[in-house]
Length: 340
Ligand code: MRU
Image (tube, rainbow, N blue to C red; front, side, top):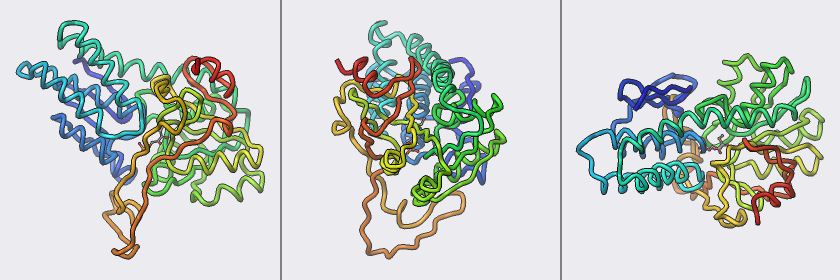
């Protein structure tokens, strides 16, 4: 496979490297993935994360495995199936792996075809960001005050990002957006990673706790909301990081435009509505304390039970528009395009 490089993922001289998102921004640590099992662990532990990037990372891991002459076709197919199960909610993971497998099988198990397809997946992801931004940029006006949730920038794509990509682009255009960054409990993708990307890009921003959004909206401090997605159903309902639904309800009440940005690889027409989307549940320790570069701190009683869904589903009627690489769709336009 040829050398490939993005903000959070690299293939360099036959080494697959991942920027460890669990320890950012305290440490910028690149870790090496040598095997399928290692990549599965990297995905499960969110060292690589975000819907588009877990798909691309898994694709590169499979291609790296296929590069080893001794691996058989049966082993490649088994590895693909294991990778697909690493996390359940973001459809991009199975989409990318199925795409590689389809090419591989169509070519009578030509491993070079699979490897080439992984390169295409990597490069296409950056282009998709560019196309999303082209459709989304007009939605941001000069001096807008924008709220975003989780992390949807260069760390989770091979390009500039999706929802955060639109914001970064508008900043580069001189529109001077101010960003309220939801910290995004429990794993703080906003407070750690989106804030880090804002700092890197010189974007004016303030981190807020997730429970502050309502009063900021009432005070008129937020005039647009941009989020990403992990899976968009055919009717436009979508799954994204837990807390997104809260924001959508609040935005609806306060009449604030609410935008979802994602590549076509996030749309799953097999899911008719959000009810068909499988929501990942994660380990109780994520809620009972914090983990990461600062070590592990637990504050809840050991005996306490925890419910930790990593994502929620936002119904389509709360969305102003869905921004894909192919265009910007109102809910009705989205349904007319994808539902029938
Ligand atoms: O659990 P994570 O950090 O992988 O969740 C990520 C999100 O929910 C993102 O908002 C989503 O994947 C879109 S990334 C462009």
